[in-house]
Length: 488
Image (cartoon, rainbow, N blue to C red; front, side, top):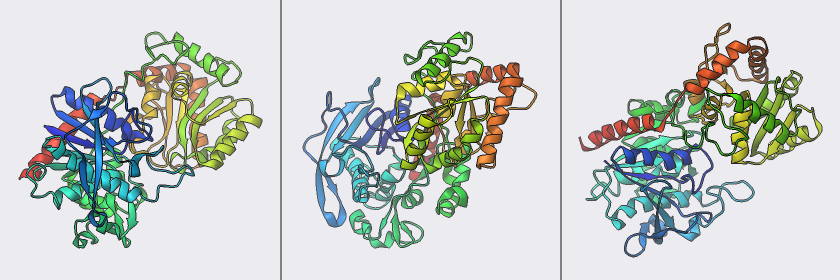
C-alpha cells in the first residue's frame, strides 16, 4: 500500500511527546513490510537543513479559503537509518518558530488554527507536487485532523486523492483544536459542515471532532484508552462522538525502540547489564546515587520519576504525598520540567529538604536512561495515559513500575500477586495521595521483605516485549480495512 503519514512532530526532527515517536518510527517498520510510506511535517526552525533537497518542480500552492492561496516550499530528506522519504513544508510565516505549539511564555500560538489547517491542506496538495497517489492518508491528533474533512469534501472527486482512505490516530484526546467559528472560512469547505455532527462544538470549530467524524477508520494508542475515550472522564466532551464511531475504532499499543532502550548496549550507563547478568545494574544504581548527591546505599530502594511536571501526570498528587514517602527508608530521584509551581516546589525540596530526595529540573535524555537503569522502582501516577513509554523502558531495565491503572499503563503492566513473584509492577486504582503512598509502601515492603519475589518480578519485567513489528502489523490490517470501506 501507499501511505501518506502526516504529523506535527516527528523524531528526531521535533518532539514534545509520544506522537513524534509514532510518526518517526512506525513508517520504518511499515517500509520493512513492503509498503511505500511518505512522511510530512513542518519545517520548524530547529530542523537541520543539511542533506535536505528541494522536492518537486516549483512551489507548493495551498488553498486557505478566505485567506487565499499561500505558496510554500518543500524540502525532502530521509528518516534516519532508513530510506523512508520525509517532506518538510517550508512556510516561514507559520513554521519558522523555536517550538511547535507554544510561545516562550507557554501559551499556544494565536495562529495555531491557521498553521495546522495549512499543514493538513499542504500535505494533500503535496501529493500532486511529488506525483504520489496514496491509498491511505494517516493523520495524527487535532493538528492534522482537517485532512479527512478535506478528503471527503474538496478532494472527493480528485483523481489522485478521491479514493484515498483516511486513518486518524488519537495520541491524546484532551487536545482538540477548538477555535472560533470563523475558521470555517479558512477551511473553505462550506458552512454546511458547521453542525453538531461534524465541526461545531459549543459554537466553536473543533478540528478533532471533525476528524473523528470524517476519517474512514481511527485508533487510539492502546486498547484500554480506546475504551476510555468513550467515557466522560476521558473523552473531554467528545465521548459521544467516540461512541458513535466506536465500530470503526481500534486500540493499537505503541511499540518501543529496543535499540535505543537496551541496558545491554546503552552508551549512557555506567555499566551495561541484562537479565542474565545483573551486576551492571548495581553499578548503575551506585553511579546514579553519586551523580544525584544521594548517599551511596546498595540496600535502599531507589524510586525514579521521569515526567512532564503537569497536571495529567499527577505531579500535584506526588507533591502532596512525597513528604510521607520520604519518611520511609527509600531514596527518590526526579527528572522533569513543566509547570512553574512544580519547578519551584521540587527544586526547593531537593535543595533544602531530606537527604534522600534529589531532583533535576529540566530534561536530559542521558540522565533519563541512567534513572531507568539505576532505580529499583519507577512511579507513574498519571491521571490518564493514552499509551505511556516510561513504564516500558522501566521494565526493560529491570525497574518495576508503580502505575495508575489507566490507558496503556493498565494494558502493559501486570499487577503483583502478593506472596508470589507474579506480576511486572504495582498498580493503584483509586488515584489520590493516600493511594499513591500506600502503593509505594506496598512495593517497598516487597523489596525489603520478599527479595526473592521482587527479583522474580524483575526477571519477568525484563522479558516483556512491546515491539513496533507487532504494532505495524496491526496498522496494516487497519489500513486494509479502511481502503475496503472507502472503495466499497
